[in-house]
Amino acid sequence: MRFIMMIFWTLLLVNMLMYVAGSMIGSSYDFGTATTLGVFAVILIFIVSALIPAQPTEEQ
Image 1 (cartoon, one colour):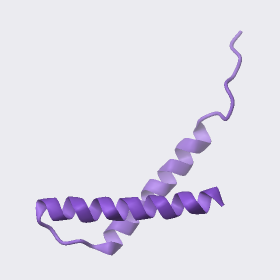
Image 2: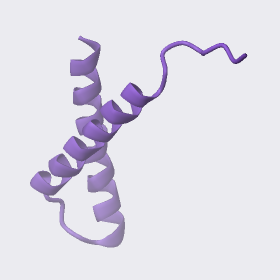
Image 3: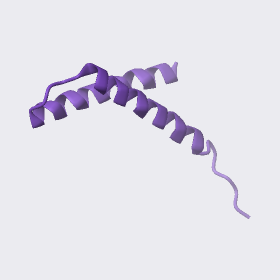
Image 4: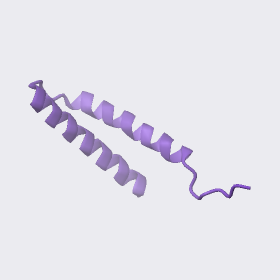
């Protein structure tokens, strides 16, 4: 369930960011481009979370 919520919120926030940034620079909002960027952000978050260890390791 947490992965579904992460995907939902990431896509929502990236679309919101693209809308606001596009409004600030005067360009039009494109849902397809924003969603594609959101999917890449979700994949990047999944990769980073898989690389970070869950528990600290003991150093000798």
